[in-house]
Image (tube, rainbow, N blue to C red; front, side, top):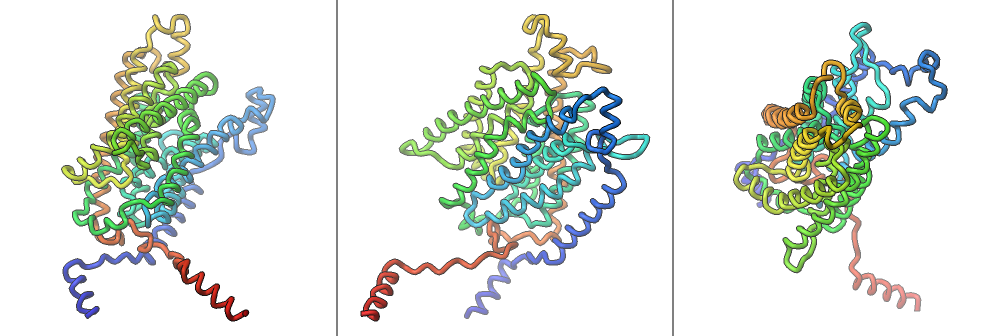
Length: 481
């Protein structure tokens, strides 16, 4: 009888081959060897991490090692690094049977992505045309983590539905697309985007959504039993939320100019995050019978203030402006989880596991346009005698951009947001079609959101019911008597 059932099941819905014993090791070994070769050819230490630092100090009249950029940037790098590996990782552990996959594949994407990012960003930003070498320092490490963040955001939309090999493919193309759109937005259009609302969140969100749309699974309801949370999985995910929430001021201010710009960025992000928590809690309570809170909203929409504040954080948006941004985007993000996500899945066939549309894509897009409006609103009447200094320090109006006005800068900021959306959507569709080839060992529709497909799981401990425990205890007691 069992054999007949198995044959019928295989006839009507054949299981996909999820064996990655050859594919995953092959990709990991080949790609890592490629990284070793490429690093050997191109990557070198910069003047602040090389042994020539002593000569560099002497030539530039630097009196102390403390002036090495490492001591300014490394605390921010630590915070960003924790966000990438712990914050993003644990945020994806909310599924009842996919905690290993959430943390483990996040780890895999970031570990490969940061290496590829150092190369890609180096080729676009720091390649020495004379020596053909890329020099890296602590700021390069921060930017590489930023680059990985785009692919990790995209992974959130695909969580539980792709194989580990596919996650590496997503990272490979995601980092490549990120480096190109970053070069266009920051170098060619000369946009300012300290916290990455446009370059990281908007791009990463729409990149993941486009891939998920192409990889639509009409029978995903077969895995519905695993597509949900339990008490402890939501608690683990909340740990990720708290790490992200606490360190987001460092994320937005990590690569801003030393001094008032970095200080202002941290303050604005701090205030926007705090404001978005209250509005998220308010809308979540209003939406449920009896005013109960939904953990999905608290885990995600409370972070939307940091996303939306990324571009304008170093601008003179004023503290009350940061509170307004957090206030509004907290409402928008929560409403997204309540109404937009079900609409997208029902009518646009878009299956967004983590809701990256509401946490990253839309807040990132809004953050880009908020930055455009704030930049355009910078007038001499508002900033008086410090106007020229503000423009030079904040917008880098020097060299070929010396004659650019804040109004023009605002237009370019808006254009940069559109570029990030276009790269995310078009690039995601192309990568999605690549991932549709039946060679990636992705799970079947009835095996999604389950760690058992790709992970060795420990056996569940046998729990003795309390009544039996009592009876066993009494038996031993009688034997002693």
